[in-house]
Length: 109
Figure: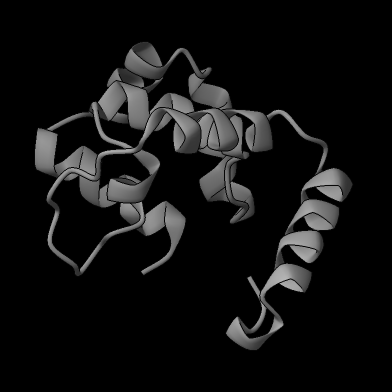
């Protein structure tokens, strides 16, 4: 399942239209439509807005096919995720590489 498929699945589960998702998330409907027309994934910021609209966490968003039990983040984990999402893509990649260097036996992040 792709990210766009997952968004479709969550919309269908709630009986939402693309317009409703736009209203609930604050993302312009034209932007949402363009993701599907161009087959591109939304940014992390947009995914966060979508998750907030659906009242789920990013972890729950990506848990398709697994149990959908809510995942509780510690305050430190929440701060880390918030900080990571505000980084530029190159900064995110650098941080991931740094974290991987701390535990190289675990493979790529």
